[in-house]
Length: 125
Image 1 (cartoon, one colour):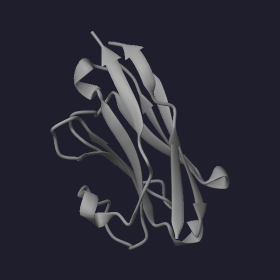
Image 2 (cartoon, helix red, strand yellow):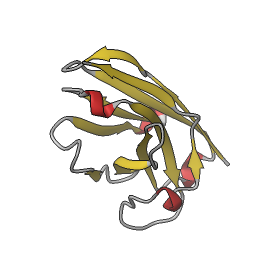
Image 3 (cartoon, helix red, strand yellow):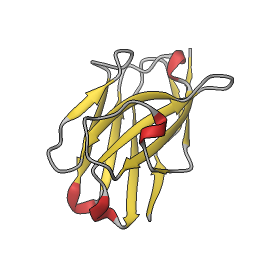
Image 4 (cartoon, helix red, strand yellow):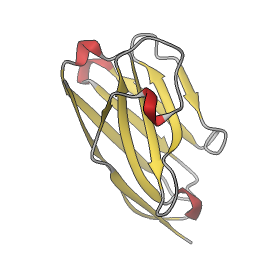
């Protein structure tokens, strides 16, 4: 099993920045890739970004390209989501996820095996 713990959410004004962290513990050697998803009230969970653990290859949703950056620190078993130029539309609960099956960076929630509890990001206008 893999346990994931997010941190770094909060309230920020439009145009501001936040950095989310996700610390993985447990069977971390089984992790092939990790991702960030977000879910706003009344909406489906949507893909934000993903990263392959070994190579560091990344993928970002079109809605966040140029503003958000996913990265990882292998020594700390931690993945980050740097969020810049935040907009009110970015307001959501942000979830960290991990995948233990090899493959191209998936964007569907069903392709991930483990999930964190989520951290709230609220962007005020």
